[in-house]
Image (tube, rainbow, N blue to C red; front, side, top):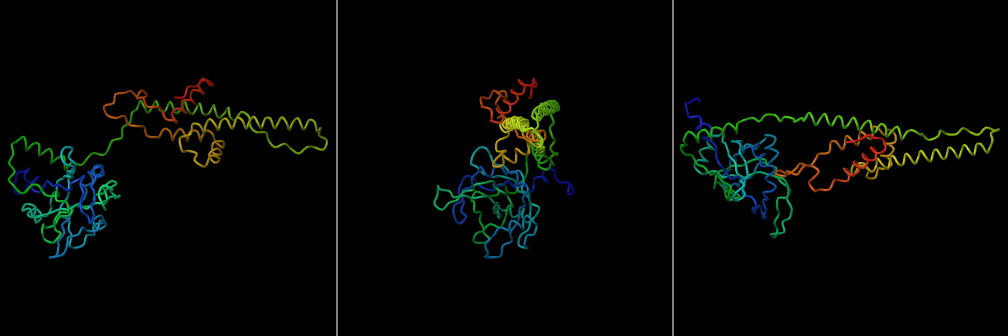
Length: 358
């Protein structure tokens, strides 16, 4: 600490508690726009990544937001400069719906203006909009909000140098920080949490579940191999050579009939195999390309079946709601068509070949 100041005073001296935006109300943007809190909530933490930008306004000129691409690319014009950052953004659960946060200034002039109550602020954001039939000519925010920056400017320095949202403001002015040791400890932990770099996410691996899945996949591969071998037991007859001049017409007719019967039987088996496989394909797999999909299956049934299994194994499962202690399978919800089809195929396979597919 260069000047021997109290550590907590250094940490919190330039933190400003602010209301960034009132929510679930109409704001005037040349026409009424309803700021729906549902679309602020999913991206509330992204406000912690945006800069606080000061607009140096010429006398009599209106205040304007900088271009969003200039903010993103770090190419702000001379009349704008970055003077701080935002942290601790949240939407309180109780009371009026508002977007709150903490502004930290890196510029001494901005601290003095904020302490004197001479700064106003305005949020820079983008979002989809849609017509709002509740008020004439009104629109509403209709999709997730993307934060870009927070603009600050001298209050009353120009005709429109006031916040568009009357509820957007700085709450705390400069005052002596007096607190007991317990309060100091709490604030110290908050400061440490705000400055902490989060650890990289750890991938969770359930070893027992992984081993069980490997066994299930192995058993399924064996079952599919046996099914494919059954399908390939009889191949379509090869093309009959041209009849020799001295061949017996009656014998040749019998051979032709036998070949036709074998070919018909092989086709029936191929059709049955495809019908079984098609019934177990995931919803929307075929679309308008059934013929091409069947060619792929009949060309290499094993590879095609493994492809379907791999797709089903990667489908995300539904997360059980918190507080719901109902065991899986007893929720009262009916199984999906994919689940029913798979169970039917597994049951038929077990009855026919004595192999249980899980």
